[in-house]
Image 1 (cartoon, rainbow, N blue to C red):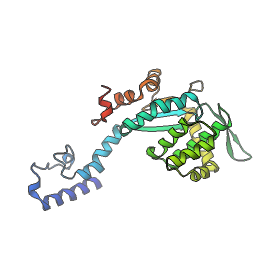
Image 2: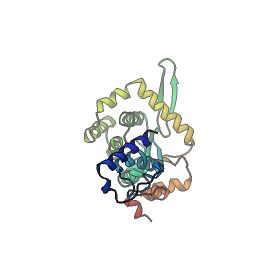
Image 3: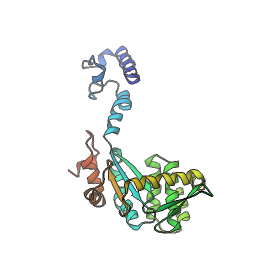
Image 4: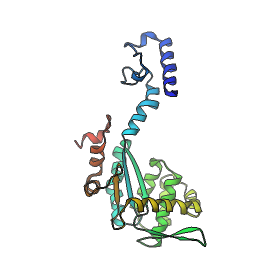
Length: 247
């Protein structure tokens, strides 16, 4: 109802200000006002309330289950995910789940979870940094460059994280507050549960899902040509230019 109201007010104002500016007949049904850009005299409102919602609904959901110091995971981010992010992020909901093949134990004496990671305590710390970066900066355009920087830079975990934070306008003190808190511990636990509910215990990482599904074919295509996989899965009416090159 609010959307219709905004469109009604806007069309009315356009009509009053300049009747002659509308060379076509405005449909009588409000449901038809945003059907095309030629009809939509109120393109700003159509973009905000109708076209954007439709585009968002058409997005491909792609989730990566990984661990921060896994060589294959880092390679996947560097060679596939980063380029897909740059080329087709407008059609993808890209989600990172930093946990992988770790396992957790609840400690009643501290009321915290203790994590054990495949590549040792450094990886547990790096996983937590990734977790807190994603939570503190949920916009993909904020945390993706930071995660990419960490994956493509080798060295002491905290040194690398601080350097990458500086390079990507991330406040590392904000991340540290999270990693040292019960909230950070709980966030990592949430990823543990999500991973255990989705990824088979014996599956390697990175482990990916496409619109909630995982198959060997999806996994193979993601690791060989992620952009093509995302473009071919996208069913919306406005694919990015890069998708047209994959046809």
